[in-house]
Amino acid sequence: MFNHVCGHRPGLPKVVQYFYYFVTQDDGFTDIFKSSILPRITSSLKLVSQPTSHDYLGLNVGFTRWYLKEILELPDDLQDQAFYTGQSRDSEYLGDAGRVEFNRWWPDWDDEFSFDNFDGIFIITALNEAIADNFVQEMEAAFGKSIHKKLLIKGRRRPGHQASSNHFGCRDGISNPEVRGVTFDVQEQSDPRYPGSPIVPLGAIVMGYDGDEDKDRRPGWAVDGAFMVTRKLNTYVPEFEAFLLERGPKYFRELAEQTAADKLGARLIGRWKDGTPMELSPDRPDPSISGNDERVNNFIFQSFDQTHCPYAAHIRKCSPRNYVSPGESDNSHFIRRHGISFGPEVTNEEQSSSRTLHARGSHFVCYSSSIERGFKHIQCGRSNNTAFPPRKKIAPGMDPIIGETNKDGQNCWMTGADPNNEGRMIIFQTPFVVPRGGEYFFVPSISTLRDYVSTRSQNRH
Image (cartoon, rainbow, N blue to C red; front, side, top):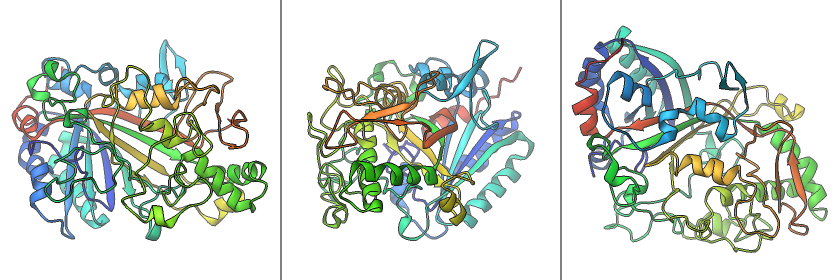
């Protein structure tokens, strides 16, 4: 168990989180990685045995299918088509905007996320920026010309009371699946911090264990590893707030303008900003729920009723809890999310103009033993799927937050936002979350980093 690289387990402690996308240049990378980087990788054992101090630094590493297969020439197949396709090519099926040129799909992403652009990524966490910045400088000095930085995204928790919230102001990080004895200590607590979080077998997240549907087909070097998906998601906060202020009062005429806007926003997401689930308190945020770890995540959805929470609400799409499609394994589609916000706070100018002027958003990160069954299923089979949850008398529509379509003439839409008229449709003319890049990585175990990544010569013909 302690062979895992930390990141897909409880998560690296952080106030800041850096995403260092890189390509390697020559064989010098492996020698320097072995001597300077491998000893600093944060293993599960290191995380649980060493107390976190003010100078703490967490380090994780992942590699693309290109680096593993073409450069290291690792044998065998990781049994995941999305991983070998790569996210840039896969983005057409994820619903990202883009175009076809020269018989190839080109997503509308930031230039840095160009086709087959990366060999790997370092994820660096710390409790302050100085520690993270110093490590980046030390790492670059050690690698010299054997590594080339393609992109560095610096994420940071939001200030003050918003530290646990995303840029939309919504509390985050309270509904990750848990693994008994791994993400929480069964000797100290019988339940996870937030009861109601799904308890899943280790193999749903980490390869080679019960719960990994491909356990018996994994190559030995993949055991104790996990897939990691990154997504740079730009968020359009002023536009979202303006939309809620314009539409909310039309849905909830009895409420004051801002209260109506807040209620519509809560119905689109499935929680009030403080984390109170709409399923438990559909009319107002309830501090007795949001402030109680025993209650804030301890609920199920009413299977054939969306007066409390719409079928298409973001949290209901991504994690339907007690309701999955017929034939689905209860443990097939879970992921653990460990992303962070990036970019500045919304300015007064942006608020007054209802227009985003500065890039901000969330650098999404998730871990699982399958991209196809995990992240990709959630995005394509749920968030983008207008018929999920299935067998409803009115089509639910798409996830209003991360749902996507790149089909000409189509927009994201949903029903159920109006509790008094569940068939009333909202059509979103522009998205509020826009992917601007990402990649699929494999996070190896400590032993694989030691026995394979640190020893193999790079095959760059």
